[in-house]
Length: 128
Image 1 (cartoon, one colour):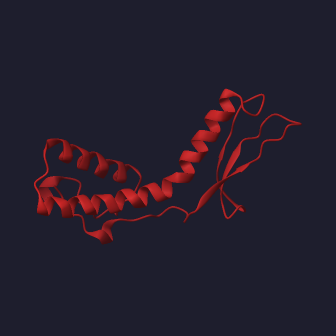
Image 2 (cartoon, rainbow, N blue to C red):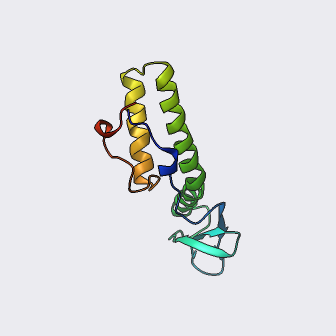
């Protein structure tokens, strides 16, 4: 298990909170859902091809947008959980399932860009 230097945990995205601004207009085709910060700065647009609000495509787009809005706090919680797991492993030895969960958590954080580039990639570099 790697001992993570907390200074190596980063969050380089637009600071949250992110919210959804529904740009659906009943007079026209749906124009999507904007992911915004402070209701004025668009971060991303989730286009949708639903004919009517509430259709399957609209609901899927809404759910995707909701997940994107939750990403910043999810990354921060995942980073805190990673450090907590490392502290727990000092007190008790993790079993195979615990270690697999730890590895999965590290990979998710890495995929989300939550480690600085200096953070080691392998367990062999910095053992607890």
